[in-house]
Length: 192
Image (cartoon, rainbow, N blue to C red; front, side, top):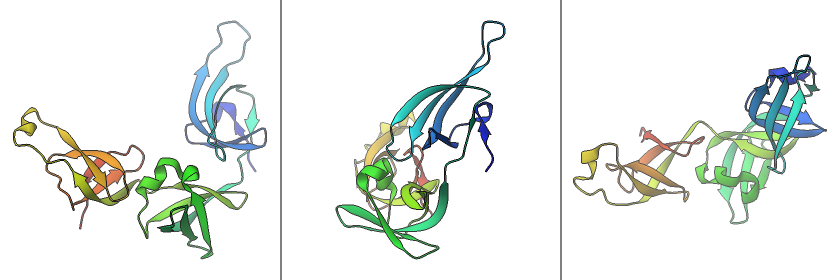
């Protein structure tokens, strides 16, 4: 397995630090002010299993292994109130993750949604959602005539999964909207 040098770190990269799997949130290269000092790499890392954030500095000469993390295609099946159930599309085995493991990602899940599951040492630990999902608006504030005079105004809407988003005034209850899963923002009306 190839080692990753500290000088090669980028956002969203997966590395093993002290035998634990982390994803890089931020990376900053600090140039030395003294002669002979080596460049330091300051990072913010998120632990893949506990979601704890760690701030750590490394010398550029340090190397990291890639953790045993794989992405496998999966489908969301249903939520039984306690855990959310999924199916591995390669082995057809079912597995579940709880709301705590999923965090905000659970608000983008709709039955039958195709996604990727991140596995560490063969065990499912988190999801990689598609870039956008289409969801139905279940509640929307009425758009008041004249509100759009200032342009670009939005209103609050609740989607079928409970997600709260800001949508343009012309969106009504019952319409399908496309939401960006990275930012949680309205993208467009969903294509029927």
